[in-house]
Image (cartoon, rainbow, N blue to C red; front, side):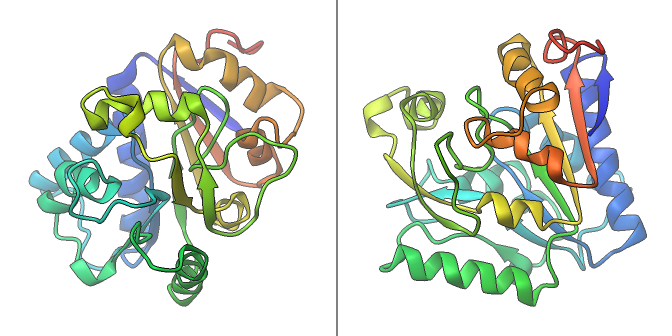
Length: 245
C-alpha cells in the first residue's frame, strides 16, 4: 500500500480528485468505481469545481457505484443513487447511460447482483475504484465476518453501519434498511487500481489494522494488502496510529 498523509480533509479531497482527473486525462473512457458516505462529500465537491473550471471531462467515462440499500428505489431521497445525483451526477457531463447502480428494489436481489457483475465485465472492468472505510473495516457493505462473498451480493448491515447511516434518515437508526446490495471484495480487488480514503481520528484504529495489521476477513479492508496498486489517502488524524506516521 502506498500511504499518503495530507494536511487535512480538504487536502485529501484535492488529492483524490486529482487522481481521478489524471485517470480520465490518461484514459477518457475510464471506468470509475464510486463510493458514498460522509468521507467523499468534499471529494465530490472538488470534482464539481474542477469540472466547472473545465479541468475534467466525464463525457466518455463510465461509473459503477459500490452499493445501495435494499428496498429503496433510486429516487428515494435517502438512496445512494439520490446522494450521487446531488453530489456529482447532476453537475457534470457524465452520460446517463454510463451511470450504473445496483437496483435496490429488484424483485430478485441475487439475480440483480449477477446482472451487475456482468455489466462490470462488459464495461471492461473497473479502472479506478475509490473506497471509503467503515469504523469496523468494511468496504462497500462487506461487513466483518468469518468469511466474505467475493462477487456482488445482498448483505446484512452491522448495527454500527446502520447507525452511521442514520443521518440519511433524519437520524432515525430504525429507519435505516437492515440489508443492502454491495459489490463484493473480489469485485473490488479485480479493479486495476484502488484508492482508499479516510479522515478523522475516528478512523485511526481501523486504518492501522488495515495497513499494518493481519490480512483477515474480520477487517475486510485489510484484504486490500493483497492488491498490487492501492493508494491510501489520509489526513493526519486518520494516520495518527500508524507506525510510519
